[in-house]
Image (cartoon, rainbow, N blue to C red; front, side, top):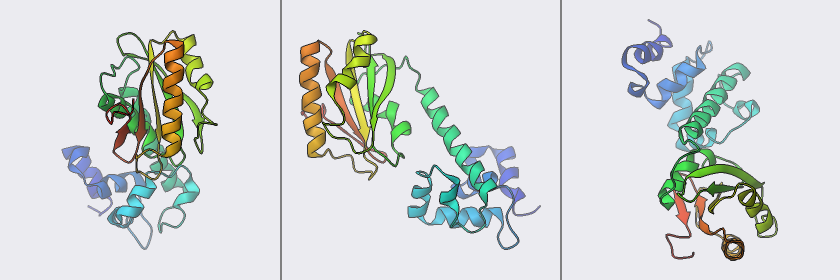
Length: 220
């Protein structure tokens, strides 16, 4: 049995949970090159933790060019698998999910936001039982109180007859600690929510596997 066949055989006989990250990646890569096997290429990609974490944020085939042994076809397979994983994760957090705590909200959004390379601002519309009605993206880019206006945040909540909202955005740096602008925006949204009768339940800042809750820290 060739080295390239071993991860596939192990997956078939023992299941994907038995494989290392490098072996799973080798299955996606498929065949190697004259110089390197698929497993060798995968091991090179995963042994450098910085590179491994960086790959999770890539969205274009061209970003894989500097990795030896990866052509467009292999890079496309990896990108497709990562995107499918994100979509499955989002689908598993069904729209009827109950948001009972900041941790629930963070879990609901983590897969969607943690690896984004740009800031994205989302609003989750909730009913009277704190179940998700809908999630909408309001803005993308450098988020400030001037860019994210309460009008845009609460408009979908009014249309959907939401009882309350939870807002969230990501920090591509991975550090969820809120900026001064984050705090100003939270205050503006909280005040608007009181006026409209649609309370702001929380503002979550999503980092790399961690989050900051304004509610948990007593800022709401």
